[in-house]
Length: 117
Image: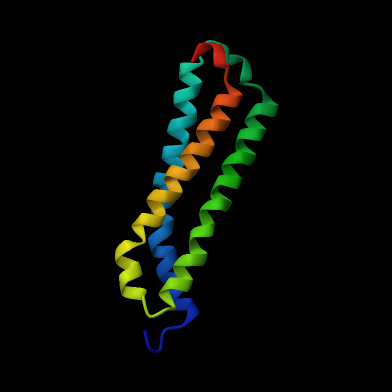
């Protein structure tokens, strides 16, 4: 750890988290798509400009929330627990995906007709 800078920690964090962002977004997309299909044909009514704009805003906010992982990651890398953290930070990813998935599920339930679930 000696000689490493915040830049090194941030670079390592980006190398770890950014490829996983794709998985994160695919999981959330799959949840929305599932509830959309389960609500068919009633969910078809939601396909209008305002809904699509709201969906875009929520997707951006979900990705902003994903960036919250950088805070504990960089902090842990700067600590004496860097090696341990790097072996187990996948746990933070899994917890974050589950948490975001639960929130996404509740939004999807609100968007699509409950009568068809």
